[in-house]
Length: 81
Image (cartoon, rainbow, N blue to C red; front, side, top):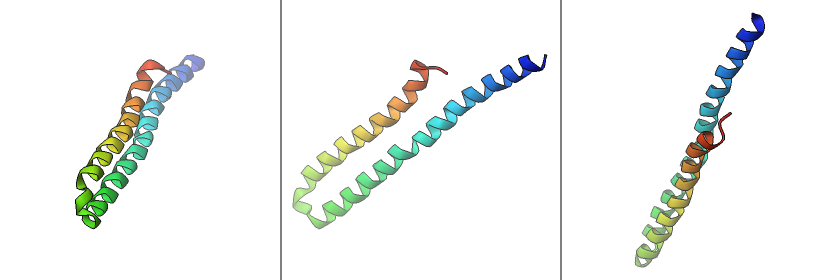
């Protein structure tokens, strides 16, 4: 009886660890996006003539960072624990 309760408790912890892991993994893209837009605004203030190029690079960098976060959401569904 104790073995079955232990297995049930372990299964519950595994599912919760996946969601905690994604929460921790989402911090990285969040910090990256903050750096991208913070430095992009500073660059636009220093060189107003290059706003178009800077904005284009900011959007591209944002898309790559956000793609990492979206991959992190999808992976637990692809490889369930």
